Amino acid sequence: MRRAETTFDDRVVEAALGRSPLDIHTVDYVPAPTIRVGERIHEPTSYFLWHHCRAHPDLKTAQRRAVELARWLRFLLDDRGLPLLPGRDDPVFAAREADFGAFYRRFHYGVLNDAGDLDREHVLSSASWRSTRTALKLFYEYLERRYQIPAPFELGTVPHHITGRPVRSIVGYRPRRAARGSSGLPLEPAYVELLLQAALRIDRDGAQQDYLGADRDHAILALAFASGLRRNNLANVTTYEVPPPAPRRDFTVMPVADFITKGDAGGDAFVFSHHLPAVWAYIEGRRAELADSHSYRPERPLHVVDADERRVLYDNPAEPENRTRSRAWAQCDAAFRRRLVNPDGSSPVLFLNEYNAYPVAYDSLSNVIEGAREFARTHIDPRFPASFRIHDTRHTYAVHLLLSVYHGVLAKSLAPGRRGEYQVDHLAAALELVKASLGHASESSTRLYLSTAHRFIDLPPEQFIGVL
Image (cartoon, rainbow, N blue to C red; front, top):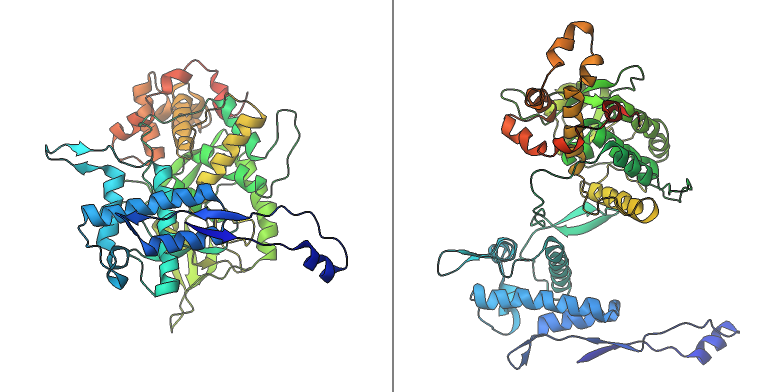
């Protein structure tokens, strides 16, 4: 067993500084785990663990990394049949992406046994796979530096979910979503307001804690509850597409790019107006400050000439003729949107990283919901659902919209000539109207979202439009 040692001589430091050093707790050593195959130490993994312990003297983390690397090595030997050869023929050097893909499927979905049944005994949880994925990334970055060995997966650069700085990550092979059931976890209106309060980091006594991303997180959740946008749309929606506040109307409409409709790339969804002021407060406040103080420089930029809620006009400086083009927002995917640069040098994407004013990463939205949820449970109400996730904002929107239709709240907000189209006498009739706003092609998809609506049917209807 190897040891990573740290030495510290008070006398040397005192002689150099001319005064006594501070009392610093030092770690004498951290034992580095080793991985063995039979009686033989497996050198590539064991050397990595030794170097890891020198840089990060945390035995618990090192032991977890050892278990994860041993699982990968055992899979290559037993499941993939790679021979245990010395030097650069070692299985961890010889592994290819086909081997890593098989490893992902084996520990994500199970394997067929001799009887033809799916054996899920050793399937990893999403959290365990995420940790294993990180361990293998670190291990192959080490092999790349030490031995110039390519990894059996593609490594790409993505923004860090907190700092926004570029970091390397394995492309694809993400943790599967937890099996939560199709009904989701919709919130009653009082809990929606509680979570919005938590996003601002305001506790039960009304005191607000310092948190740089409070206004942004509040706006993200407000727009999610207002519109039911899917996470990908929420991460890439632009400021041009957000409807203005409508103080005299309970509902407005918003174009949504990912409608699943035949022959059409987009459509309009009903939006709860009472949530929009929080979004616009962010646009005109903290977001404007970020845009003024940072420049956005994406790869292969496209320069916005003009835009409204439906279309964008843009120039592509990489094209020789550089003529102005037009595209409907409904036809703009995430990659295209993140190439756009406003005339003032900022990104048109609505939600920005607090450190560099770049668009927030897709995965950051989960961190937003987790941060608000845990603050709500710790500082406001411990009964707030511990398993609430970002997609549950869409379930909440669907249930609230369904009951707004059922109770006639939506119809009252429309012009007299249109009210008859949105007046129903049972939930099944309301389902068809909600289906359009969710962008579902079939009613069966919407029914899965709304199987919990009966739990909220007796609430006062004005609660769904923000009157609590």
